[in-house]
Image (cartoon, rainbow, N blue to C red; front, side, top):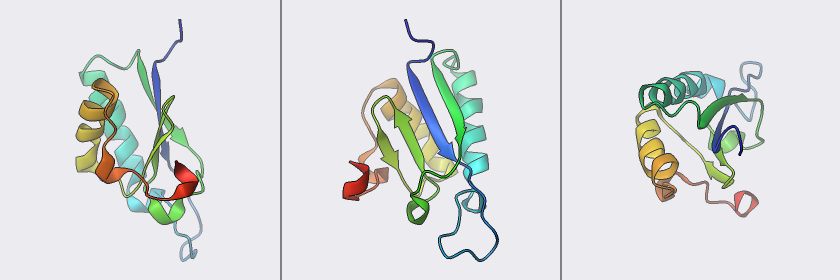
Length: 108
C-alpha cells in the first residue's frame, strides 16, 4: 500500500528579480502550498495526500504552477482561492479542475 495516494507539487522556484521568465514564488506559490497543507490537515487528509515544495517545473510562464500525481494533471495561474476547488474537485472527487489546467501540448 502506498504511503500517499496523491502528491501535490507546488513550484516555489526563486529567480533573480527581473528574470524574463519570472518565478512562481514571486507569484504567491509559497502561500498556495501552505494553504494546501493547512486545508489537507483540517480535512484529515494529510496522511493520504502530500503537498510538496517543488523546484522549477519549467512552466514559469503559467505560474504559479501546481501538478498533481499520480494523474499528472498540470495547473497554471493557481491562486489562493483555487486551492479549495482543487481539493474538493480533484483530490476528493477525482475530477480535475478544467479551467485551471495548463492548455499546452507539453503538459498533456
